[in-house]
Length: 390
Image (cartoon, rainbow, N blue to C red):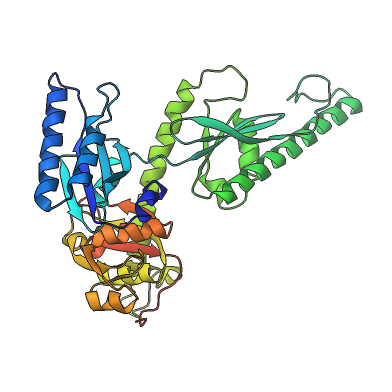
């Protein structure tokens, strides 16, 4: 999951009040239950020592929830009497949570947020393609590719045995025009994907046209794109089936990314029992597991993907941090040596997520029971980390 939606939390010092709460009102007494949950959260924040202005700001924010269209849950973060971030959740939390701490309580929020990878959609026909960007909520046109004018004649795609040499030349001109069009489309899709490699690429249109574009895409993009029958280029079509297909594509992409990250983590730790060398040399030093190693990677600004199992005990381990999100260490004196005059204690998972936001890294919440990182905290790194680094 990309974490840019959490960036507002980087610009303000704590302490922070964090509330994750069920705001669904599906039952007959839903409004009453929501009020009781809010009162309980306010009491808990007060008990923990939160200042009155910050508690009141959260109470006002949650109390203003409209009964119609309420999300299943909300996560609200406030500091110094001001609500800084209010996030709708895709699922209700199993239990309400209210904390008052040096850092925002981030880890429980990620599994409750819907992940919507952007989709770069190419609607293809024999004359060109329209490119759209879908973020899971809406689609907007972001470009296109238009091929050269096809020769007029017997209708596009005519492929019967030529009656004479003029028909033979006509067919070859048609095919040459389409070949150039397919290459133009492939070049534009590759260009836009290179600018944002995390996007999932989807091709729609006639099966033969999709195939011709796909085989012209550079490796490895061509092997990663998804082809769909729904959602042609003709105007006025019904895109409901396309939107449903795109939801399936997103869900599958999220699952694949998690599986790939866990496989890389496992491959990075696996050693040949005979030689002691890494089984996957290309991943040697490119993974980290355990709180000390991942803290070091964050200090080195080397996090690419953070992996957390929030139920693992190491996720709750106390670490120390400074005002800079990458001032992290297991001990207070170490953070002081990094330049933080007043180091603060924090949970390992929240401190590492804060660093991941600052470093524009991704984060993956590993489901309980999955073969995740040792101790519940791991990372894929941007460059190899030396085993003997301090």
